[in-house]
Length: 245
Image (cartoon, rainbow, N blue to C red; front, side, top):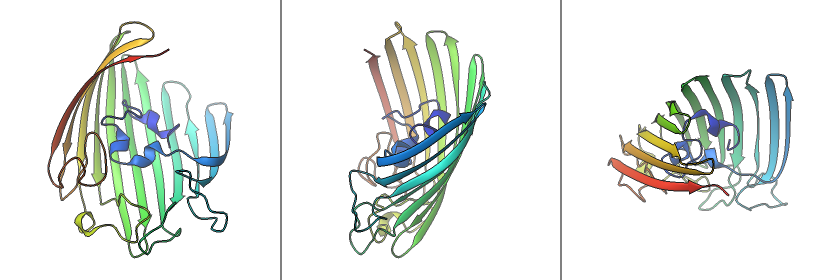
């Protein structure tokens, strides 16, 4: 997820208003993992298995925290597209849950570079199997990046979620506050970058989270209801300077 699918939106894996603000799994990192990847011309295939995530493993329960997946990527040049399956089990079950709690994702992403524009798009299907219910959701996104000059870029992305997502895979049931209806949040992001040099970049991002049907997506992330009340919208602006050593 973090090395392949993040590249199909113009804000990649940014901490502020990126795709992982709607689905944190786009930042999933594996512990004690085995991975195979092989490129055959324009096609790359990969598969992986992890014995746990978030530093939680239990040799008496081989499903605890287990992650596994695989995908195929096609990249002949200007066109770049991939399809990935990603599955993980609960890593610290509580409140009547067990390691049978599972999330299954199928993610498709595409980018097309037509200088000075690059276009992005993608879709993520998610099924969550909790102890006493199942939840299914669909995430769609579109984006573009315009290279104004070799040192300056302007980006835009729109992310839309249709369906409720439980923020705690370790629970027996999603809290009633955000599991009672199908949520439909939309996150809109505009960003500008300017390179002062090869190593120093000035950037700014403006983001607007439009929450509908009790959703609580925040431009800075966090648990449900932590940074924005359910059903309320949120605007955020960030300006920063990035220096690479």
